[in-house]
Image (cartoon, rainbow, N blue to C red; front, side):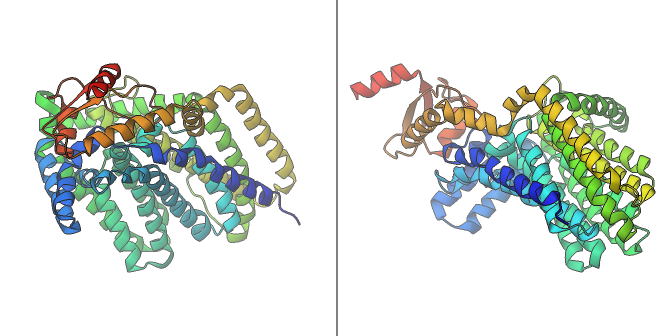
Length: 498
């Protein structure tokens, strides 16, 4: 019999692929900014002087040591920062949106494939259907596209670690399947590196690993080998937490106490529950898409649970744990005295929290619907069309009511920036800026201010003050004695005189 999910799969995959076009269309416009120049300084100079990858790696490790002592302990993130694409070529930054979007796609897809196909034995078609919808939600409704896909420094600290957590969890599920040493090795490597990135992604990785250990322990006690990758991540976190640079960045008010850590747990639970409730209202179109996923999940699970005798014990505890994990990623923010609402944290933080929200919602739907299908058995065939009608109807109503939210989507933001001409103007100005800075005959560079909207891109402005932080770092990066920016009309007047 013709399966209703087949045309939906084709439609979902096509829509998802097409939805990537506006993101990739901005790749040629994207440029380095702000911290990219600072963290990439030593490696860039090493590349320019030697064109040796070995010397670049040595400079990368030197950057880690420098910032470990003077700024922050997130050692693997700093290592990635030091390898920003313009280290090697001033035209290479265009790879950033493709690289970061690709890592998110591959990481989430790897995890979902292991979960749905390898573990639950769903078909490749059903995996593609769920994967395309879930990825569409994760990419289109992320709160801040800049730090998610376009600014290397921000994406390397938040998008890459989230992908690492997905890669690690995928290896866990592969290990459970065959207990191969290579899966244990890769899980250990990804978890160790995760310990050197942002703390939100590190908490996500630890929480998911602990959940999997508990759920799969009854299968085979060899699952306890996965405690080793968890221990390695904790070791990486300890290296990060003990960095002298943390105290330097935190200032006089920086104190790490056991009481403070415990108090932060309670505050994180409160902020997490508030954030969970608000997210359902903040991302209505994403919630509508998750309703559609719920319908498809129910249809898939009702077929598999009985046939494969799948078991979903303690659903209330598992779902509560998943949302506890969501609250847990608030803990680092609360511990340092920050808040999502007041904007006192990096915009990469809300991105990670949104992604964890969607994962927790997906996991809750999967486990809860699996338990329902386990209890109801195969007696729900007659409900198939009513469930499809109700689920899709509710999603459509929500989409119509909240259609204004579509203007916050990544595609709309990118498309609007391109259509209004902002992207073309930005590219022209950045090419002009790069031309001046790469002119070896210019020692004291004077450049015009960048004007106009930047859309999902970012340019931390060069100022009139040559001693300002951005001015100094860019001057060093391009080996200029000094760098200042002046109003464009003044710069154009001086250019005519020259």
